[in-house]
Length: 59
Image (tube, rainbow, N blue to C red; front, side, top):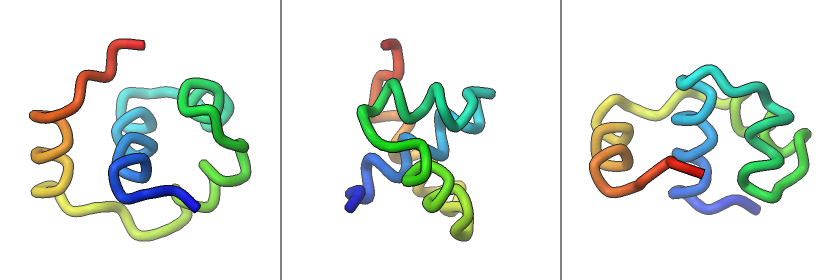
């Protein structure tokens, strides 16, 4: 199970142009898990704003 913050990271990385496989490698989860969470409804822009202001994505 992926937590809310990690789910938001999946969406943010996808929005930056990362492939599902690259996202899985960066987060240490299975690529099918990435696909599963990307198949759900996208988070609201408010949630993205909160995540982007509190998380550093340089990996």
